[in-house]
Image (cartoon, rainbow, N blue to C red):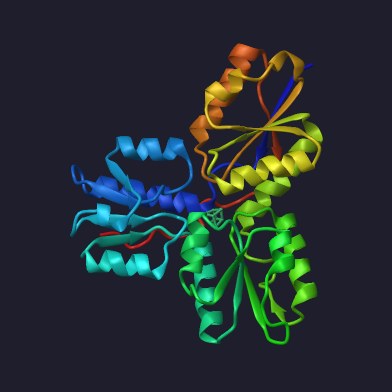
Length: 309
Ligand code: SF4
């Protein structure tokens, strides 16, 4: 008999809730005005499309926002030089950086001011890592994986600090940190690393989901780091796992051969997309009403919204 299971927590984390609510509030306070956002506010095409339709203009460079206009910084944060460029253009900045990411920026500034070299574990080209490393470009070295950790060259007789991208696989980070600990005896690592609670909870939840379902769907965008890690985590736990970006992706799967299907979604994936996926599987592929599997309970409104102009 077929089963459909939706695991909790899934979808929006508190940092994404804050960023998206901020964007909506700014749009509603300035009807008719073009509001700019540097990079995708969160890495999800459904969210970006919805905000674009509501009037938000997404830009890749500060210079694309006209002088004096309103510019949002995304949940992933920006480097100080970007803040300076926005100030020089007289832009009215609203900062939707997730407070957990802001905390990593603060750690980099603190270590750099003490003359301590910093290893940032993360994906070199990800917006978050670009912003974090931009806090102290001369002091930060990026390590993407275990082989980078084996090769990185820094003095071994002095303190070395570690920060991490917040959306990495918690287990992979632990593995990289353990290599670094062996190489640098005075390594300073924040307790539990910087992988945030939402990333950890969703990875724990998908691991549990993979125990119940042979096939796991992770709803999220290809450029969403935490969604990609959920796919990896489900596969490592033994399930067949697919990243689902749109309903078209579902059409490519032979559902007759799949009995138990589990659904989760990345921290930037809106709930209405999950509802669409459930409806597709129920109405077109004969899956029953979805069961709920609760692994952890979260408060999506951990943070206050930033000051808005
Ligand atoms: S995944 Fe974590 S760090 Fe990223 S926005 Fe959500 S709460 Fe913040």
